[in-house]
Amino acid sequence: FFTSLIEPLFFKRRIQLLEIALGLLVIIGLYIIFNFETQYYLGIVYALTSAFLAALFSVLNGLFVQKTDAGVISFYQLFFGVIFVTFFLLFTNSFTTAFFKLTMSDWLYMFVLSSVCTAYAFIASVKIMKHLTPYTVMLTINLEPVYAILLALLIFGDKEKMQAEFYYGAFIVLFVVLLNGILKNKTSIKQKLKKNTTKN
Image (tube, rainbow, N blue to C red; front, side, top):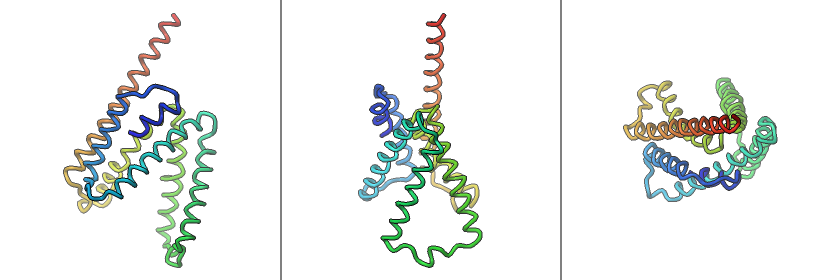
């Protein structure tokens, strides 16, 4: 939702009401999935702030990747992220002996998580913005809780079974992502046809 408002400002294009409507539908879908309780005001404020910053981050990456290699962008962002988290843990006295007690399986999972699930995925998400708009990328990222829970269900079985609300919300989010892709594809085809007719 926030990306539909921020992206036009940076990319100097008109705000599209369709993108705002689809963004609101995703918010409804996520609301149903997580079944937010209205008494958790602070959590909702944090979530909205995080969503806004994530949207701004995505739009800025969309601008940077047009001139800079995705690997370089990702390197600096992840590097300074590590520096920030290190100092945060240091000043909050979170570096304890228990923090460094890891088994071999822990190291293996951390390696997979950091290399494949973080570094590669991050670089790929930045690189793809050469071809897709930040709005489309952010819309697709909203599927993360959906396939994360489905993977948990697949790996851990019945104990991760979700309530019916999850499936309703997941359907809404998936529907919006697919609808956005179809509409954007139709618009792209129309633009190509217009260019071909003007050339002829």
